[in-house]
Amino acid sequence: MPRLSAFPITQKWPAQNPDVIQLYSLPTPNGVKVSIALEELELPYEAHRVSFDTDDQMSPEFLSLNPNNKIPAIIDPHGPDDTPIGLFESGAILLYLAEKAGRLIPNDPIGRYETIQWVMFQVGGVGPMFGQFGHFYKYAADKVANNSYPVERYTKEARRLLGVLEGRLLDRQFIMGDEYTIADIAIFPWVRGLSNGYDAEETLRLSDFKVVNAWVKRCSERPASVKGLTVPAKN
Image 1 (tube, rainbow, N blue to C red):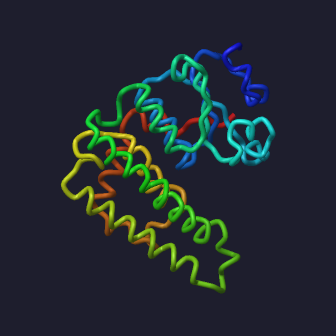
Image 2 (cartoon, rainbow, N blue to C red):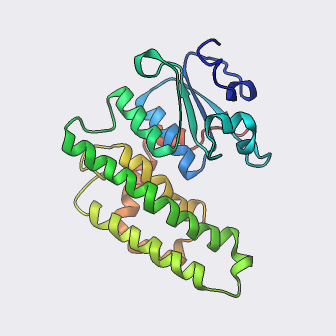
């Protein structure tokens, strides 16, 4: 395993095939962005499950790759100039994979930056705000039972962001038009999670966003999504 020997994380999660991309993740909205992209791009990879139940993300081995202790993270043994590279932050990984494969991002500079813009929309808006909504609505509901403010605040913001998406997708199949890109992959798992993970269809009145719902269905039914949404598999 010479190409990976410089990465301590491989001591905890040994590579079966050290010549392919190593993915350290869980099937969360952030995690599946990378597994879906890898499937779409048909890039060979090996998935390792980072269990939150046993605080794997806080282990010294994981922190050696991502000091921010969040999934997903990757190692590409054949990075730029055939040099191994480790990366964390899902938005950065999506951009790296798309550029490595030459797909899922437009070639023209204007289209490229517009796609990156929407990836940043997810990274800076959709992910944090939907995540805060889910936290207070589902996972910390008992802690705010006597304080409606957190759920009301993030419900309002989640619906605002869904409205932005509804407007963008009114006359488009995908975020960038007819072309499926990393912008779609970045955003749709989070929207899907509002119902699939948080069971918040009624609270967020998701039926109001018909165009967004149809888009999520299109994205979710792609073969790469069907596979990527389950990676890494449970042990």
